[in-house]
Image (cartoon, rainbow over all chains, first blue to last red; front, side, top):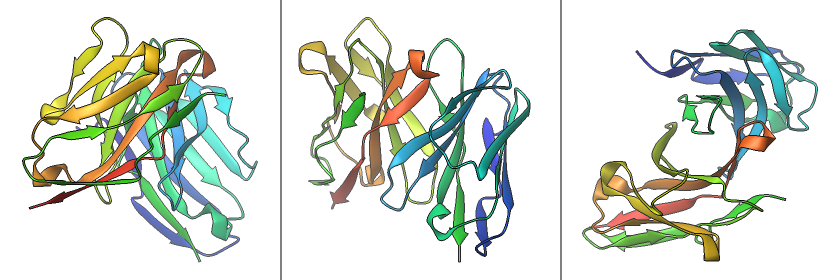
Amino acid sequence: DTAVSQTPKYLVTQMGNDKSIKCEQNLGHDTMYWYKQDSKKFLKIMFSYNNKELIINETVPNRFSPKSPDKAHLNLHINSLELGDSAVYFCASSPSENTEAFFGQGTRLTVV
Amino acid sequence: AQSVTQPDIHITVSEGASLELRCNYSYGATPYLFWYVQSPGQGLQLLLKYFSGDTLVQGIKGFEAEFKRSQSSFNLRKPSVHWSDAAEYFCAVGLMEYGNKLVFGAGTILRVKS
């Protein structure tokens, strides 16, 4: 009964490949997010969706494409992976009325 | 622009000693404020939050934080640290008018010595 779950937990892939990370939340929240944590542990928002509608796209390269099939799911697809994409990607969700975000366990992406 | 500053990159305290982690924010209004903890290889767990009202808020694991509007601060405290508190702590500002996003500080790594 994990609240925010994302898969896979680890992802190792070669440069140029395309990969996806999936996220699901069972909290009934309307808003979902993707955050990126870089090698210095700095966390920055990438995208947010509210009821399947894109709200924030924080100047992320268009190789990154989020997709929200319904308000409980927010997937992240990355094309043409680059070395600099190596990071931990966190999915999160929050209710619409505040910003209290609940985070998944993260996906550690390593591009070699 | 909105920002969050955690001035201490690392802090080391002895087990049983008190702890204070500093957080300052830059924002025009009173934001929502949060402290999260991240253990190695783990996700982010919410310790406590401030939305409004009483400026001293209690959280999980014996942590508390005090919001001081005049200082734009939201410092995290614990009276007696346990070895299991060793982790990285992140302060965050929640911005409703910016798509409900969180802006995080750079984090403070807490080491606990026995």
